[in-house]
Amino acid sequence: MESYQFLLVLAIILLSTKVLGLLSERVHMPQVVGALLAGVILGPSVLGMVTETDFLMKVSEIGVIVLMFTAGLDTDIKELKKTGFASFVIAVIGVVVPLACGFGCYMAFFSDTADPANVLKATFIGVVLTATSVSITVETLREMGKLRGKVGTAILGAAVIDDILGLIVLTVISGFADPSVNPASVFIRILLFFVFIAIVGFGAYQVFKKMDKAWGEKRRVAIVGLVFCLILAYISEVVFGIADITGAYFAGLILCNIMRTREYIAKKMTVISYMFFSPLFFASIGIKTVVTGMTGTLVVFSLILLAVAILSKIIGCGLGAKVCGFNMHESVSVGIGMISRGEVALIVAQKGAQAGLISESLFPAIVVVVIVTTLITPILLKIAMKKDPTPPPAQGQQTA
Image: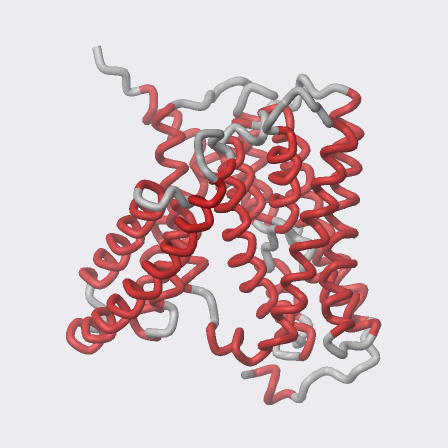
């Protein structure tokens, strides 16, 4: 007899993630924190009501693809061009420093010369720390009227470049995870992938521009947009051996400048993501997290990894800002604004687990980093920006 247990599981997950998400929002935290906690509570660590299944894995994979597609759609290319060189320098140093620190932290605790993949595992922990999720930073700056200021613009631009660099590093490391793969072929595949994206992107952009004029805001536009995302995600993974989320992100990036189409597709994607896929993805991360078996070594590693995650972004991004002519206060503010890891780190960690580079025992440490950095970023940013000696922008600029 066919089991319908999955319907009850879905109902429990969706309700619990919403309730805890609303509670998180009441204490001025993003709902993703509540969704993570819901997964931990429902999973084997606490109540043991829900376990990871093939169905849940596949649905959560669609969830992360939709999330990255939406992130690409929400990218502001004009804002990215405006900050230009400064954002690029901040992003590069803000990726290199956490990558090196995460690598060193793992090697200090779990160095195993007998494991041929040990260096890759250490590197992947560094890749997780390179991630940046600035949604909560953006909201904090908006409340303070400083989103369009020098610091806010630099953070937004650097975050976009940071995500792209992180995806490239993720792709390279994932390619090396298979011992049968020739390193040269990995770089060739990446190069071919970007050539493919450039060609397809140009063609798709022209097609969607014509669709924008002919169809406007019709449901078929959103359906074609989602189809485009899924096809690019499939081709990325199957043809080029590159993470499907990379293809999904670039699908959104290709469409982000077609304003009416972008806004309509983003609105529809937000609905299906918010209603179904995103809660399941974040809950699945929590369900996968087993905290009951954490040893003393893992607890210490979690605390040190958290400290490294915070300091490496402040130092790395702050140094990049200082090099580009920001004063000390602005540089520290930029570094603090890039601390939050959020859903981006969870996405990268999930890919690492699928590639066999992050063990289940390390997931609690990563979840701790995600939750705490998300919690402290708005607090530290408000403290730093309140002490900003520069005057706030004019009222007209705030309204804009």
